[in-house]
Image (cartoon, rainbow, N blue to C red; front, side, top):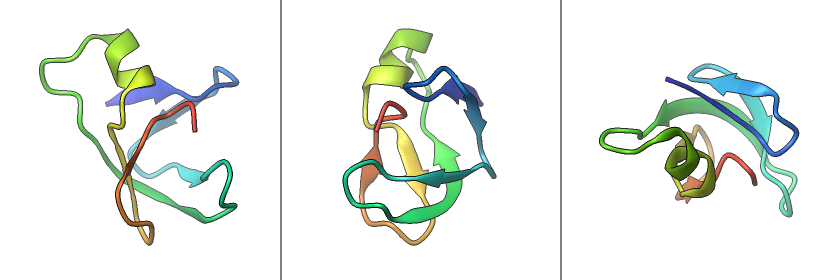
Length: 60
C-alpha cells in the first residue's frame, strides 16, 4: 500500500520515515488500509513504524 506524507511525498511499506514532534526514525512495517479510502488513510492513524510504539498518521 502507498500513501503520501504531509509534503505529498509517496511513502510505502519499507520507507524510512521520521515522526514529527519526537524526531524518532524508523521503517514503515505496515499501512493498515483495509476498508478505507485514500483520504481516510492519510488522515487516520494507519501507519506502524518499526521501533516506535503505536500507530501514526502519514501527515505526522
